[in-house]
Image 1 (cartoon, rainbow, N blue to C red):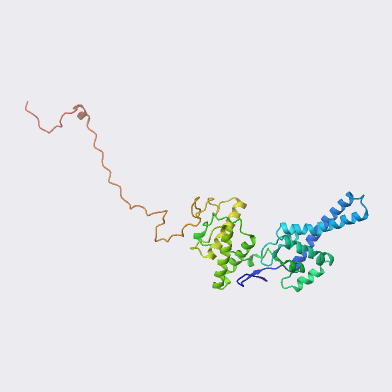
Image 2 (image 1 turned 90 degrees about the vertical axis):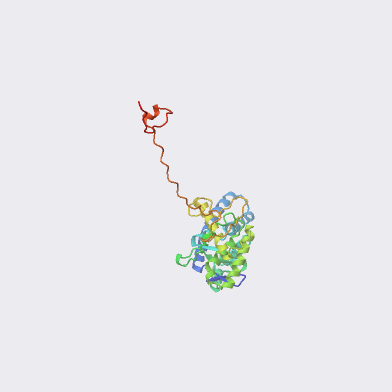
Length: 323
């Protein structure tokens, strides 16, 4: 088990690849590279049959360097450390700090690999990997890289804890596109191990990571949100957006695309914290007291047919005048 040491001297675990899996990945890459090399060489030989011996030798050397050295370097650079063999074996090349490699790392690994893999048939690379505590060959030591396992058994996988329910959807307006992959990796590693860290060290590390994320998003960390909860919330928001792009569902659980924490344009991206049950929510005031409806009034009885003929005659009093 390898360890990634942070600025606070906190060790985060990485899983370095072992020699058998790395050897299998190299064999797959070499088989594909040599197949492409033979096909390209036959095509070039047929196209340059009229050249002299010196020109043919120059073309052969250029083809060798382009196919067996240049193409692997380009593939590792564009795929962020995943060649065809490493992808098949579930491996990846990363920097010593756990971040993705760049062109200079792939260039150094490829240049040194010509000597320790191609020219010595992999003997030097195998010896260096067996001697190294993290299984690194000479090219990894010079380039500052490490080959790690991406696919691990389900029982050993560490899961990122979910954020508090009142933070779900609160950062829906944050621009997370500028946060680098290396920082996301460090945040996930911290969240999976924050329960194993010393409380004081863990709080300091969370504050530093939260400040780094906020610097890339352009919005400060809310003062009412702990740094660890902020990190969990932004990671959850990023996963929700990736799921929405992949499956086309709603943001949270297949519901509407706008989450409960959405704020309209011009409003603050950080709404107030959740209210307590004893206090009325500002958007949901107490209902008015219940008032029972008044008793219905019976309609007046309709006049008899004889009464309608008398028109405006005064009503009878029961007195009959003498004849």
